[in-house]
Amino acid sequence: MGSTPSMLTQYDIEEVQDHCNHAFSQQEIVSLYHRFCQLDRNGGGFVSADEFMSVPEFAVNPLSQRLLRMLDGLNFKEFVAFLSAFSPRTSPQQKIEFIFKVYDTDCNGKVAFDDILSILRDLTGSFMTEQQRQKVLTHVLEEAGYTKDSHFTLPDFVKIIGSSELKMEVEVPID
Amino acid sequence: MASSSVAADMELDRPNLEDYLPPDSLPQEAPRNLHLRDLLDISPVLTEAAGAIVDDSFTRCFKSNSPEPWNWNIYLFPLWCFGVVIRYGILFPLSCLFIVSTNWEVIEANITSKTFGVKRGFREAGGPVLNTCNRMVSIFCRLFFPVHFLLKGQDKLRSKIERKLVEMMCSVFVASWTGVIKYHGPRPSTRPHQVFVANHTSMIDFIILEQMTAFAVIMQKHPGWVGFIQKTILESVGCIWFNRNDLRDREVTARKLRDHVQQSDNNPLLIFPEGTCVNNQYTVMFKKGAFELGCAVCPIAIKYNKIFVDAFWNSKKQSFTMHLVRLMTSWAVVCDVWYLEPQYLREGETAIAFAERVRDMIAARAGLKKVPWDGYLKHNRPSPKHTEEK
Image (cartoon, rainbow over all chains, first blue to last red; front, top):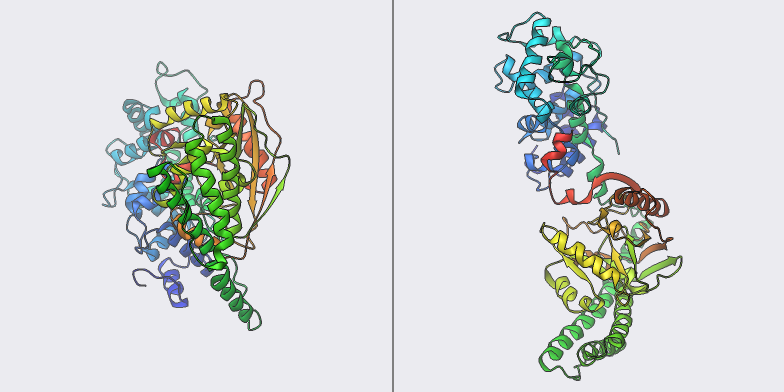
């Protein structure tokens, strides 16, 4: 698509749509493109971590750092693929896969006790001590039939979270 | 209390984690079931983050909306071309000459006055077309700088004259970009213990208001020729300077503000509590500094008519000079200024609530939407404590 595309051609739109498995309509892709260009201030063709952090609503989110690691340096096609997990057209299975990727920081396909603990730390901050967090997590794991040393794979996640009632959708404004 | 804060972290209908901690660490609450599923499901937080990536109210405040092009068919296009010719070929050079002759005289007057401190004759910039402009400006310069230096002893008279001159200068400036301004409401009077607040779209807000009444304003120090004008002419009206990036400056500025308001012969103080330029469709949070000075607050609402030109100065995108050029090459700058009723701090109202109330008034009058963000986030990142609160 080039390093600094200024206009999207029909071909580009279809390529992006294919890449994200038709999670977004063509109109939504055009809107996302405008948003991408808006965020990409220096016109480098990708949005840097700094540029994401200039959105205050994003910067105050407790999981912003984790998401930045996944978002940094993405070009537009990958950006749309990243956001495709939040489309109403994607299956719950794919959404859970996204959540799994957020947990699995070392990308080895397994989520361990420490991974879950670090996300819990991000979410609760200084409101809980490390001890309290470990206690709660151990207790909850035991209650569900797992131990502290269990490793979770994607199918495990799907089984635990279940497919229903997963509300993870974002509306793309069409201007 | 920790329980309410953690509840704020996750949604309110999710069970609290402290239910699973030993009873001696936190007060007892009715136990509800916390499943592993609830712990692993971070979808609400992720959805919020994705929502912010896709669209956020803060960036919308600073978006300059490009006007719809109306020159797209065969009839309108020549008309538009003709308009461009007039705007760039006639109006723009006129405005430039106007302004250049003004500045030339000002700079010259400044230099000569500073070196000799005595009234001197000025060279005419030449050209019969410029004569009227020059004359007006020369009068200004001949009066302003000598008045400034010779009347050092008689402060009251001097400030009165200077005030009138600054008003005149601003009218000249406004006329250079064919400003059509409608004022509604009673003209501000020079009384002590009052502060004026207005919404902020561009640096020209100040000039528009200054044309009517000489205000003292509190402004950010700017580099370049704007800074020069700030230092020389605006000093006389009693302006206060600050630096946005300097933290210690805040207390010093607060003290200066308070002193200014107390004195009765100072020009009325004008503050833009948004702290930054916002596009003329939204208002960001007002800073409470203006509202805790313990005096009457008179709101002023300013709304520009977008049909003629978008007066929003996107300070990240263009410098002030380019912004002025854009204004001068458009047909006119049309805006409405409403002077609203003075407001007082009510019983039991905090400064922040007072600021919000005034912001409501201004937003309602000028037809702007309100946004709960701090304008300074345009220049800085939100501090970690905001993240913690989340």
